[in-house]
Length: 297
Length: 175
Image (cartoon, rainbow over all chains, first blue to last red; front, side, top):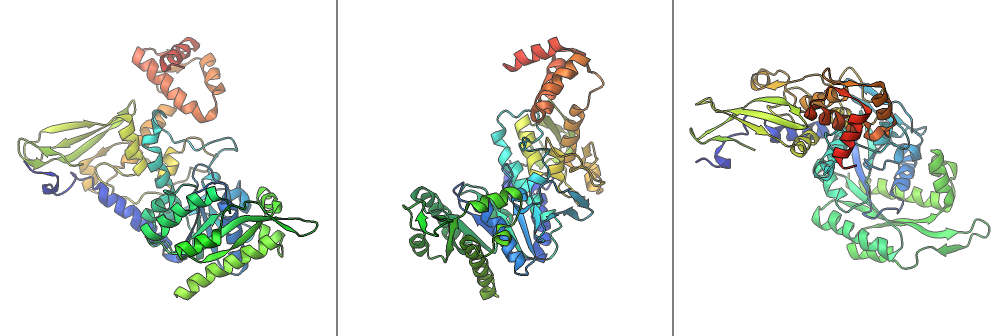
């Protein structure tokens, strides 16, 4: 009896070929994107999306053409933070046109497709029972379509805001083996750094993905009256972690409640509150991101 | 997945797929030597897994329209976001269509079937009372509930969906 390997194909469906063609389509689309950057952590609630939004705005203010893909399919927030929530999704023959922020940042997010604030992402199925068997695959396919079917145009940077979970980067790298680099976000708490270390191991040692650097968010609270900085999470040591993993330390971003206010209003904090310590820190991180790629050229 | 005709020791070829019934898709394969056929029935989860990969049984010769998977299967979406002139249309697939470069998109077959379930099937009538009750179900589970009630009615040979039928279906779901 012939075995699996003796049979020349799968009977005409060529499922493997179809998947390969999906990825070729993605590769073709991203030919006009110079640098792809994943913003990741592994830990939730450390400010990845807020930093992504402001890093994108800063890079745009510095003269770059920038796109942002919200890879958080189930909890999209980038559209609101960048001020494009409610933008109309427009289809062209060659893809879907991204929403464009006042600073010119092109955005694609599941949020643009959802009916209202209360509507979760739910996929049509005969039954939602045991949906764990297929939901993850559905989300990866949606991410692939967002990458390959958005008319990004010519971009200097495409930032990809990854949801929490140390498995998110390998999923992205499966789709995007030529990922340009990762910016890893943590807060200075021991718990956060416990998880982020796993993400760094995944990025650097297992996937061999270039790590642009490590960012410490919510470093300290700066008193608006006296300017005195107080540590918010004194238990972690991010710079030491960067040394341990031999990755660049990109900087510390102090906690500023106006970051949250600007995000809620869809405004770019770095533009609205330029000159504040947090804004200056984000600008330095953007400069270091540019330098990372300029050094490689 | 590959299929072997044990009689001829020959690889079988995809012949056609059938519209899902109760979420289960059927693919038929044929032996090119003895023309013997087999049917592969996929359960709803296996069917859904194939849908989620956005691949098509029998091959895919056309370039998929933008965001085909998201547009086909996102349940509750903003009006107008999923419609354009590029929405996939095909309803069935055969090997010959595939070989000739015709339309045999698996995803669309399944999508069509599920969309058909969303619209009112000709064999089932919803009373006004039942429609009202359906409309009171939260929007994000409405289509799922409707499909479940209709499936229950068909299984019981019920042609008209009333409040009582909805109650019975609800009891059947264990809710």
